[in-house]
Image (tube, rainbow, N blue to C red; front, side, top):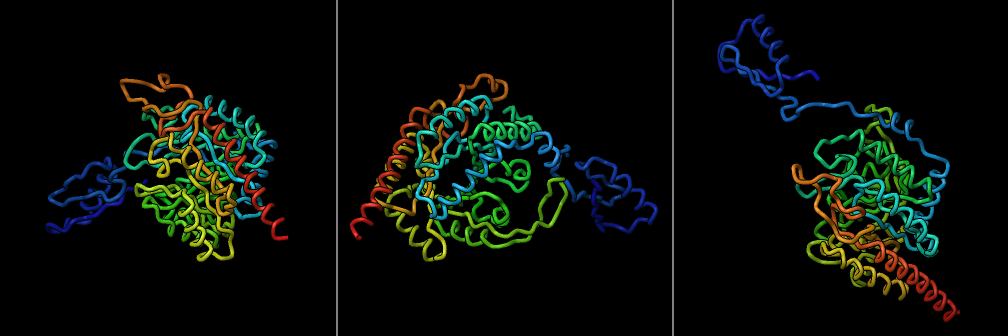
Amino acid sequence: MTTDLALSSSSAPLADATVKKAAVAAAAAPAAAAPVANGNHFEYVNDVHITGYEPLISPALLLHDTPVTNASRETIARARGEASAVVNGKSDRLLVVVGPCSIHNVEAALEYGARLKALIAKLPNLVVIMRAYFEKPRTTVGWKGLINDPDIDGSFQINRGLKLARNLLVQLTSQGIPVACEVLDTISPQYTSDLYSWGAIGARTTESQLHRELVSGLSMPIGFKNGTDGGLTVAIDAIRASSKPHAFMGVTAQGLAAIVKTTGNSDLHVVHRGGNGSTNYDAASIAHSRAELTKAIPQRHPSIMVDCSHGNSQKDFRKQALGVASVCEQLSAGETAITGVMIESNLVEGKQSEPKAGFSTAADLVYGQSITDGCVSWETTVELLTKLNNAVAARRHHHASSLNGSA
């Protein structure tokens, strides 16, 4: 890149030739340097904190190398349609997004997906979508996910991470397993969003204008999480913003900068994730949000997904069962505003520390156990999803009884 320069006026001006000669020399020097020529300081103002650039594979090339299969398209289209019907109140099934907090081992993810597919067949009242999260927001620092650092060693082989992620998504969806993501940045969706059936905007980014604009153009249902303080206003504002058309700067499949124009996304809902030390999956919290949604967006079905992890589990993965129990009780009593549930689950319960340089590597990790947030075990997952499936049936029976009673 061309290096920009700023000249100080601390002493008498140099002759034009001297200035030009010094400027050329300065432009050729490393960005970290700040040379002095005859008392005149030449300070670099561009890329001061950048150590280098590496080529990034274009979205179009990755999509060409790892294309969507016909079976994959079928899975994605079906799941998107079913999820849309649920969040818009046109279906009385329950949307369940379940799976690992983050994926760091492709083989374990495929095994989890195979188990989930077999279980889905036994849960007709649920629309089940597997969490396939490759990017993780960090409060401070830490492993940012498979795409950013696939080898979990600080080498940041992002091109390799993108290829691994897309290949896994194609395998899962080709096997009939729909997948979900968190939309964390505004570039990676060009590489993988065609394979997702549902997406989340996290508590830290729900207020972001960039993410609201991006969501307005995504082709899948999206859930906006309440703020980290537990407040719902930011999520409601996000729905109102993302349902409208936008024009913003983006990147094309060829990797070129472009002006993106969108139509707005109508498949949006809020996600209760708790916050500020409190849970918000209880009946009172749901009723409050239902009223707020109805007031703010009266033309839309009040649609709430309960994230049983994060703030609602108070960082104890075992407490996800408490959230599920509360949701089941409310569903059985006829609550229609609860349209979804999220559960962090893995083959092995709990969590383990990520590898540390000089002490351990990815090969030392326990197979099927999270290296980010703690997750419930597969056995517990089966129990929780079975309870949710039964609760939806009970809600259906409750409404049928009410209709018969009023006839």
